[in-house]
Length: 260
Image (cartoon, rainbow, N blue to C red; front, side):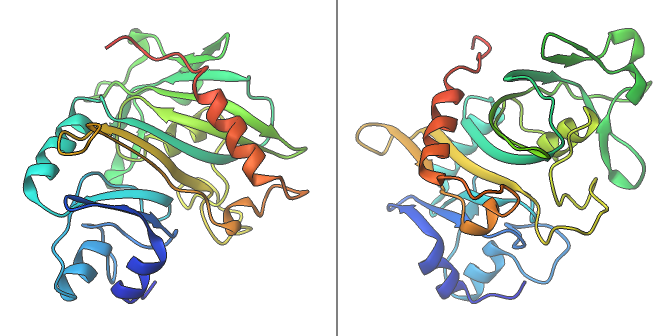
């Protein structure tokens, strides 16, 4: 997707101060460092603006991306992602129904052939009990694995699809996409797992971020990116998006957090 930085910046900015810039990124645009024709960091640099990505979301994912405008803030913010203290929330529309009201996916990830992220165990060894998906240690593959935890709450159900509010506790590459696909509920339009060709985008949206921000008063940064209308296309009849987002926000508080 080709784009002009000045136009994208003006249309997508949702928060900005002297230290950070938060954008509501469209699906189909990379943040930085992927194989692509252009990305946000590169386009900004070409226009004379230096930005440092605080975190990454996939090219196919829409929504909130936070960039630092100076290195002190960048270091303060990225450390929170590394220590898993950043509060992140996503919205996802997945195939099929039958998910519980709340769930936790505790499936370690590994990297397989062609650098593809996968669950570090055979699919048939994944177990589910009372809304918790896991594998026994004895079933792990003989490869390096990375503990990974995703919590979710079911926001809305239709006859064919389910809208989830998702909180990734860890922040592994492709974590939400792989976790949901391997428990049998892939995200609509995900090129890794949905080969139907039915959708023109991936229905995963980076929705909320909460971090400590010592340079601000009060010393915190809480931002959210409202999904654009195209995100809601699979949900028919069209929902009252304001009410749905409020319900999703309420449900996030019901997801149990591990003690820090």
